[in-house]
Length: 627
Ligand code: ADP
Ligand code: MG
Image 1 (cartoon, rainbow, N blue to C red):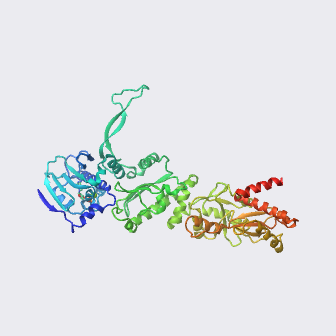
Image 2: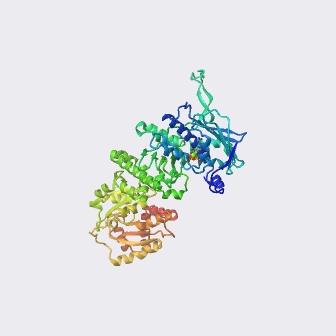
Image 3: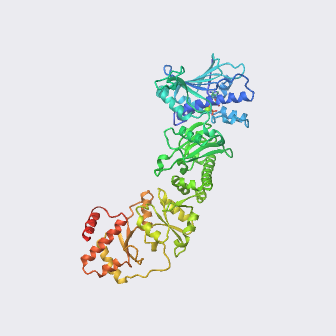
């Protein structure tokens, strides 16, 4: 037996590594299983290049639980280690045997599939153990099996043992404060989370499976009976879809893999993007477009990040731009530094490149779909809308590309790109300042009357709805020259799209001065301001509008972008040319004048859905009297 000192610069670093290397203790299993997979990968590689001549055998990794002994063992049939190798790879903390291997066999097929990076993973075992043993037999000819053991102080022992199978057992003697890792379900849970797609079979005990009766016995319906059998519990799928070539996958394969990732989701994704980059960094993956609902938060953070098929995290905010977190799927990149802090990630140049690349791919895919089958794209637009608006708002490069495939739907259900639309409405909807005014409604049902009036004039009205519309509109007004958006009920049509020609007013200044106080007596002056407009005599006598800027302010306030309460102001627009208005002036008694004004404003309120409660029931009574 031999004793020695684990080689760290200062002893104080050891407890730090032990307890705080990873904030999440459960990842020790990920680290040890990936080491076992690396060891298997290495021996497979050495066998294929002829350096290892022995029998390869089944290269599976076993996870063994022994509750009595309080041990958890990770067993592989990989390369194993000689005593010298233990000295080198285990006793020198932060020396990565994995990196050394990749360096040595650089350029040879298969060598780059090694997971390890930092030479720290092994020590994560001490986060949950009092004592760790390595029992190992190297694949090298004439190698002697050895056991290394340490209790987590920098001291270790190393001795020869009996072992006939090639490979390594890592035996964790689980500490009192970590006994949760002796629970079968807990271990299974960790394995399914991190090891679900590792490239060598990972086996953990057995599980019950239902199969056709091997004796062919039949039940009453004449069908072969299903019987319960204990089968090997393999936790992983060794060749997940993203590692395959797109040409080898059908739509069903992609949909099937989607369900493998999200077993509780029933809906199929809209479409997918298969990512495959090898320069200037390595990245593979599949991103899925889910149907995006209005409540976008629930769909967030479903992208899983992998490194060489090892699950790393499902919070990818630091790696992809925020709007892309609405997508689902998998990104696998060995080039993302995984064991480092989040804030560091964002400044890492590889991470930045990855994020730029993915954004570009997503924009290109959408552009291509739009080009290839516009009709189909239009059909999907309702589900894509929020995503594209979100992307355009948060990423200028995306916005630039999205311009060409962003669609706007009008109240007749037709879709237009921005360019198409500007052209369509230019003639009629350009105002006297040469601005093209885009009219829209967020609720065509509720704003039916306004939409109708606009259409009667030959104007077109868009139907723009969704949580991001107000922001998106401001963005469009900034980035597109000479357009402005106005909600169809925000003013009279003559004011929304001002033309040079003015309709002469039938009311004199004096008439207006007489009428105005009458209105002000009837409505709440704090909330309504009265204005006279010389409108078409066929238009309504009174309309109630909310100025575009007031509504935008209120919307911003609701979204938390604005402090303090903004007053809920509306305009009462009186049509100076309507006969019912001039009629008020010629009405004899003050009482009947008031009645008429009240009735007309109530009708206008009703048209805007603003007449409620007592006011509504009084209006109904008054209307009945009038009949
Ligand atoms: P890394 O995996 O980043 O190299 P680790 O601390 O996880 O760092 O492991 C250190 C080294 O120990 C590995 O590179 C490998 O050479 C060796 N090693 C660890 N586990 C095994 C194993 N199961 N079989 C063979 N070698 C192993
Ligand atoms: Mg490792």
